[in-house]
Image (cartoon, rainbow, N blue to C red; front, top):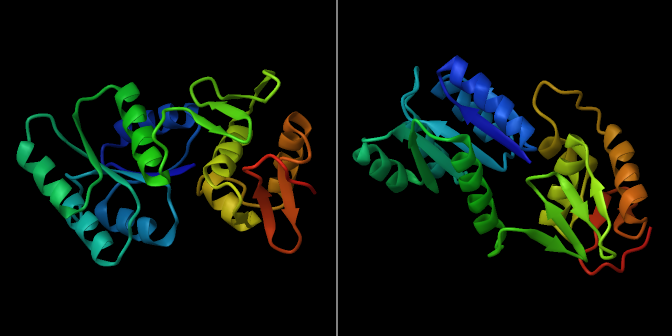
Length: 225
């Protein structure tokens, strides 16, 4: 999954990007409100982490303008720990959650996961579908036979996106947008390599090729190539 982090403190942003990347997210960073608003409108992010105290354009205005433009991306706003009025204003402007600074990265990750689960209509904490159980903390998947398969970072992000969108046709470009960061190699043909690796681990029937359109992750576990 691909996140946008809008934070003007470059040291904090660099550290958070490393932490979020280790947790299996592709992360783009903006350091001011104007760049952040533009990126949030141009890219279909899975979630945004938005500081309110931004240069050039306040985070609250960025959020309000996103919502006016019908941009429904899930947003966690970062506020000062004791600034209850900022939290209220952020929620009224359309934020989905908030987190006060300073914070523990584990709490941020938990809030991101909970927010994405709500968006995808999942009540439970684990991602289970078609006999597969994805362990997001260990970045591994357990198949219907109980076999555990370790995943590389790209394999994990790709499989998580597939499992969050079962039985939907997903183009290579769509998958690329959600698996890779903005400055990464965006060659969509690389997706074929990682799909093949997932098929080697999970079986050819799990990810079906929709010729000329992309791929379908079969939620009923009865797919075929």
